[in-house]
Image (cartoon, rainbow, N blue to C red; front, side):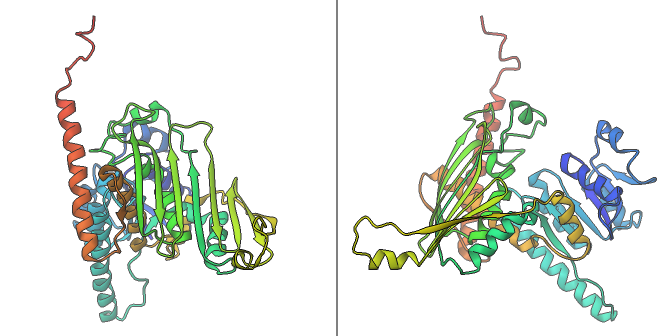
Length: 405
């Protein structure tokens, strides 16, 4: 599989290096785009001789159309706003797509990517049937690398297996995403609504939000509280608290921050008949000796407590999660399929919208009229955020300190 890497920033350059060093069997580096001179200096001895380099995704696609570069697929690792357009263009050319998280800034982008993929996949399948070829269909996946972590895979198994009954409560505090001011000043687009599209929720937490719905299922509604520039001089949020409700009556709290130290990453899941606590790569399980409902309805002691036994599940750490995602993709397997990317984006968009409207927001089901209305409302608010910040920057003096005495 010949792959072009679109976007050679922090992550894109890592993906290109993995491929160039032979860590992804069955994958060959065909081209790269958007390479800074200083970054190329550190990579040029690793990259294959004669590697084609293009200024932009469009330049790469134009070269592909002219037959100047041979590629089977692309890995997209550009700023969030560009993901949708670059993926759609790849699908139009019958190319496989593996995209870095998130699918975009707003959920419509994820939907449009999936729609473009479906059309391209149908076209490719029809062409292969006509030519009597037996080749893998068009591939479309996302780099949600934390799904490869054994601890989260085991947690999903425990929650979805039914052994402990239904989910009752979720409490996830993930404040180990600490970032200094230098992080936000490392690129002009960071920490801005126009360039980044969001803060903690959209940059750091797509992994956590993806895992949340992957393990527990999608919440039905959410009330969000996003604090913008609380710890850093940025436009976007750097602290979030969200209250969630599921259709079965389960409730949850999600807390994230890039301004707390030391941070924690602790996930508690209360089930009908057990408590699961995930922290530091381990799962602690307190299993009741009988279903909680039997205690609730059967005991005559007004202060009687259910009895439980604690045990610990040690999970091996996945040392190379990003490599694992790329290796699976090269074999034709998706760690996270393209159509799944919309869920974490819908969840983050709903938290934002709820915080802006200061009320509970229903999370729409994908491919519904409610989703279209939700998209329109969210995008209207986001456009207004961008407009206000642009106007604010325009009104700043060229040298803000010159009039200070």
